[in-house]
Length: 80
Image (cartoon, rainbow, N blue to C red; front, side, top):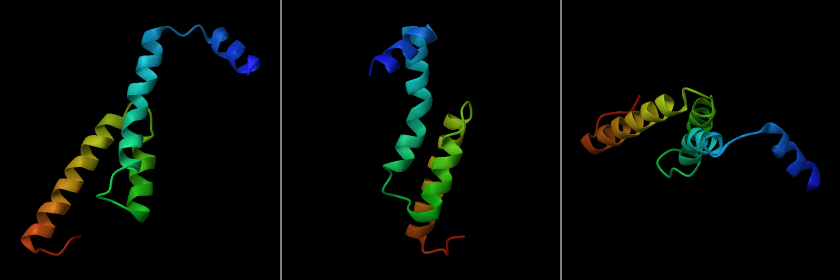
């Protein structure tokens, strides 16, 4: 445990750096806990939202895709 604390101390990260890391790590967590997608789709959306600096753009695309899928299911159209 001391080695981990020493490593973190040597990085000289400030509070805002930790906030930034947390914000960037939220989209993959949201995808993992989503009940609206499963299987391979969940895996690929997780990978896509895990890429730094595009994670929130990918998450927006994920939300759009989920809404479109839900709309198609409600209207009875076949999903693609």
